[in-house]
Length: 162
Image (cartoon, rainbow, N blue to C red; front, side, top):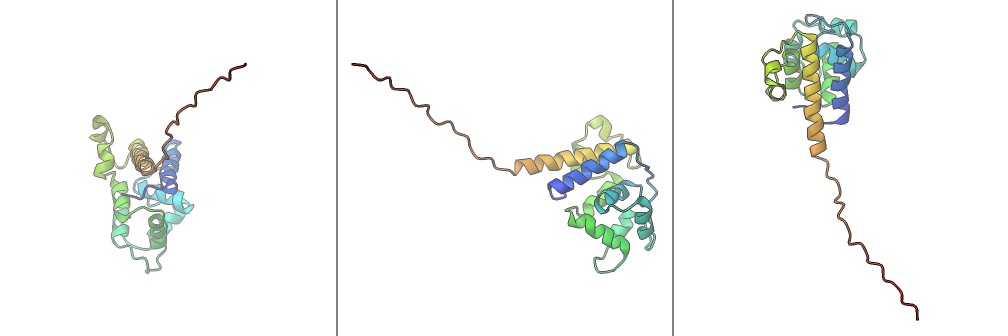
């Protein structure tokens, strides 16, 4: 699973928020689908720019990720490079397109999990928010806070007056 870092978690949350507030969503469009929206967040490219990059090579996001080559010079590979540089893995991106990561799905309540559809906006938002929550939990679990042991409170000594 992706590296639990603040920028990566924020990218997931920003993508979910944009989708939840009715950004154009179209699963069959390389710039408006699940990976396309995450790519928009990370690269700041428009959906049209991402789609145009992807159309220079055959296939959907899953095929693009399988065929990814960091030295190809293809614009879609540069887009994927940016996503990987943030801490995502190729497997993460493949799972995102189909909402299929078993760990993320297991964290979604049973009734919603079994009804998840990879091409439904609300399901994508739920998946992204759940993923961000899991990564945030992992990030916080790795932070060691110093112990705040209580020191004994000194007892005041009363002076006697002679």
